[in-house]
Image 1 (spheres, rainbow, N blue to C red):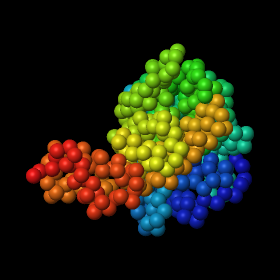
Image 2: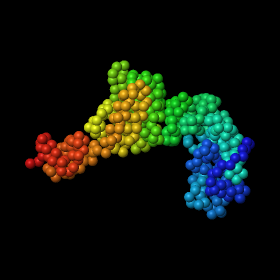
Image 3: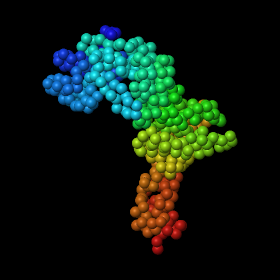
Image 4: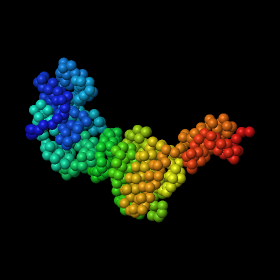
Length: 463
């Protein structure tokens, strides 16, 4: 078993976990992502341990030492431990595991050694252990060299690793995207050969991988393209394949698929729903494509409907679905209006409000439009500058009242004035337009006076 002497500092609390187990004659190592991240110069979010002690023995040892234990994953060999009430660590018995087709719960067996435990892990860069007492890296599969070379390589035979848990194909693509690593050719080909095993993996597990990739990567297109090239995407968003090779007229120079990837990468805020809106904002273009203008009529509406179905199918929350759909459905409003002055900018905000885009989403909406513009490769410098100016004008006026809820009066005020109930909504909408044209008008006195004039003009004021 390959051992490399090196000094990695995981903190006093983590080291004490191993010292306690050693005092009771058990082995103890820091394992997995914490070792990988530390070797990459990153501070790990969680520090996990592996030991030859059974779950019952782990509980007994730490309780005798005055620590608290929690059976968070006892059936899988994992006990959570804290000795100071602040630092919590997961300690797991050496184990092997196998996923049975059609279930996400593995069959767990106890392993005899740390090497056997590491052999069940997915990739070599995750199959290292560190002894914080002896200051030794345990590296039976060459993970340290792969880490230095920037390579994602399966432990052992790739097909076996991916069959054990097909979701590892998604993990492979995620690591390649977040770490900017290359995927070992044998590992990549192994994933492609068994990709159909993903057919029984629950969609919510795939969604979790999407969330991790889209919130941790500075180039999520690497993740998406990896899924496309392995064939894994057909088990999550098969509609993506329809966009490949679909040409677009000027000002585009890129295909629809290339445009979706570029837009997603251009969104620098690592917000999952915003980046999903970037990936799906033109997903409907292949369905509406025509040979003459308009080339993609109402593609934003079709894309929004498709995105809703995709996100429902992939087990997203209603909140996430609504956010993505609203961003996609409205993403062309600013393109169509291209406000060139303050009044046009305020009226654009009014249009967005009418389409039920919440004020709280405005910054994300503008980031999506900007990312979309940057991904339109044939835009001239003048056209690009016009869009950027429009974005800044809308941002400048973002706080104006653009919805009836923001008016200085309410429907109750109109009722007290004597306006017939059937006209209240109509008058309030007209008052919003009145205020948008001049925000200083949003005072109770001015709006009541204007409301009376409007009510009389349409015959809605009770005598």
